[in-house]
Image: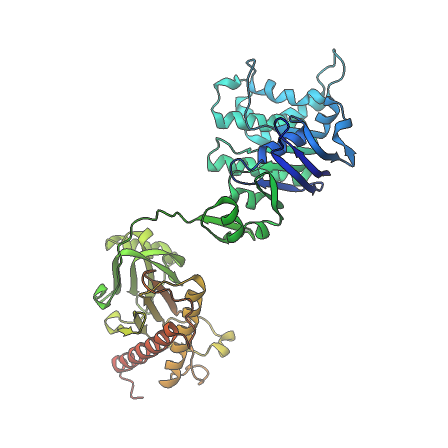
Amino acid sequence: MLKVDNLSGGYGKEPIVKNISFTVNKGEVLGILGPNGSGKSTLLKIISGILQKLEGTVLIDGQDAAVYSQKQFARKVAVLPQLHAHAFSHTVKDTVALGRYPHQSGIFSSWSDEDERAVTEALEYTGVTRYKDKPIELLSGGEQQRVFVAQALAQEAPILLLDEPTNHLDIAHQQQLLDTIRKHSGEKGVTVISVFHDINLASLYCDRLLLMEKGQVATIGDPKDVIQEATIGTVYNARVKTQPHPELPKPQMTLLPDTMEERKPFTVNKQHFAISADHVSFKVEQPLKTISSAVTNPGMGWFRAFVNRHVDANYNCDDVKAEMAQYLEQRGYHLTDTVGMMTAVTTEHAEIGEYEGDFGTVLIMVTAGVGNAVDVSQAVTREQRVGTINTWVIVNGHLPDEAFIQAMITATEAKTKALHTENIKDPLTGTIATGTSTDSLLIAATQEGEHLPYAGPITPLGKLIGHGVYDCTIRAIQAYKKAKGWTS
């Protein structure tokens, strides 16, 4: 365990870091963040003894670090500084072997099996074994960085201090190195304190973060408590947006530049739609922010083209995504710019409406096939059968994320109400249907014009979505009934 208590120090008599206190437990990874000049590296140098402290204490396993001899301290703490000077030429293996110096005793101490194991393991950990006989000065900056990390690991100290360990590394080697350090900490109970320049990497790999500002602690805690828009924005003087990592319960930060890419003000209208025998398309010059349950590019993103493709009721494919991608590419659609979904309904019967409110307009597109309609409350025992009510809602306005989600709810409620009005029943249960088993929904917005914070059913936007989706779904169901020759 390492404990820093009321630590101040720096270069000369004027402290750069002031009154710093924190504790790091065995096996914990603490990341130190802060803008340039905030004192991150200075703090690490004071803890490691490179710089003299003016006040406070550094306790290692409950004992003041000042009482340790240099070699005793090195058995407790391994340090990876930010920059390395090479006074002599060494091979990679010899450089890593220098990490075993604290474990040597006497002038004539011999190289032990334990030393060899530690060096070999460190070379393997950091992926530099293949360079072991190569002079270190012939390696790239990134390769040299990994060698010095290996040297620190070979030291096998219970505390590891790292100053921006991913300097000069590409993203693959950043991941490899930090995975290694994280694994090393977990498996061997090593306490790690590391300075990070990259906030997102620090969030992913650290248990806690210490954010510095002007030589002091701005905040310390769990990544989700430290990486908050207001906090990061204030300390770094930058506009940022945070969102969860797609696979881990960790926050990630996106920079919002003040000099945004020039976007000409624009609106969309019904003329952007095109209907053919096999698909409905909607294409615009500038991308729309979109959330959907599509086949191609589901989830949230920015897209310029939207395709609702007709497939036969007996359509069966082992790899639907690949087949859909091929379909789009053959028709000239750029895959990274296109949202694609499928429907068993004849697309010539798509219903498109444009609805105007005080804030602007909303475009709605619906294709509705209800022959295999489903009552969701009774669906637990049934198998999937194609049908598909596909709904697009395209808004001339600026929506935050919560409004996108509310728009999805409002559109779904309106669709269900339309099924009720048209007395569409689940053919297996005889109860009123709520949709089909393969319905898809898309909400898109120009992110231009009026800011529309909410899309619930009693908001201006929600009212328009509810009315428009209900109206288009009614008309689409009636067109489907007519095409099928239904009398009621």
